[in-house]
Length: 191
Image (cartoon, rainbow, N blue to C red; front, side):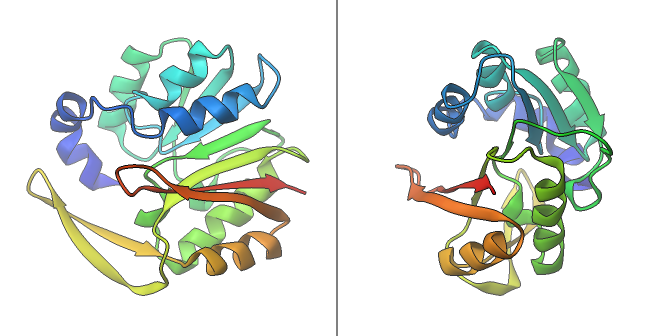
């Protein structure tokens, strides 16, 4: 997303909290050490990719922002950085052991969110966990928010909406919860 190119430097300085780390660490502990994990919307790699690497996994970071990926390569040189987006996942023949998408899905409109889930279903091994954050209410119309002077658009489905979409794409939704910051986490498993 070009919006993240515009705020990459600010984001690197401001995004110092550990949002998503407990959830990503729990996912990391649930799969064998050395697993191949796709971090969708990896940004600069901090804190999610870093947590996955510390847990002993191999990580492929996918992001559409060149500026974020440049920082990702500096912060996580042992991970592979790929420029692209989840709606047209650039991996063929790859099967990942897990995927995370923290702070990504709510940027995708309804059509692109479904396309992303379809692509991830094709790219994950059977039994692989998929952890993502999004809203928890159906919102076909975009809401707007501003980060460091740049406008972002946000979309969402309800929990039942995500359950239906995931189920139709060979996933089972196994957990939904919110953290203290009211970020909603969805954990699904590939059937």
